[in-house]
Image (tube, rainbow, N blue to C red; front, side):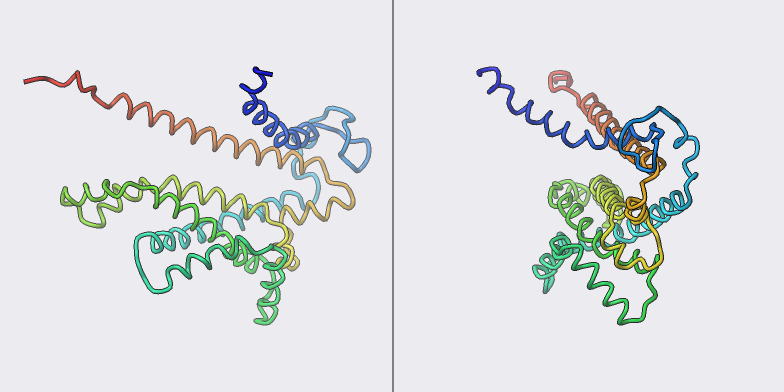
Length: 275
């Protein structure tokens, strides 16, 4: 019991990680499966057919590319707008600032069904044709909130003395932003962009309401589930997970190298010459 109390936090953490990654492991394993029927739910036979012919089933690759295009465009626009909003909320005082802070959280708290239905009603009343444009507009709308919250947290955690030191060294506002502020905020902006792309690529409900005849990857999976999801979907999902994992590991590796370089560049006090 004493050992259990001492290692309880670690055991619970490992159990939670196993609970999170078991479904992903099942998807990865079934991507190498050759199902006996139309449903890829049980292991039958090892095969590389899905990996050697990712676009063998009509609609799989086209919907996958469509989701990537929508995610990239939505993420770029939402990241630019959300970053500017975050800077305005943190660095400036203006009338309606507290109200704007409250309104930013509303898209995050609103159920996606309500948001998707309201956007559909808006587009129909404006006689705006449903398709890729409406999906991009909808995704930008709810991604901005997550970008603002992420970048805002990064800005609030910054040490203002760094910018003050740059001004004391006669740096103009443009140079302070370019060489001090932006490099410090950049990790938050990149994290917000990655989060926004993941939310856009994964979204189904809002896209389903406003896509019209457009088929994104989640919509394709929802339609294919009724007649059997092809193995190629598992392979593409595995590729997405591996790419995301590589991005995270690369970021961690770069941060560790940066910390080590900073630690080695600091000169110990006893190594300084004495007069």
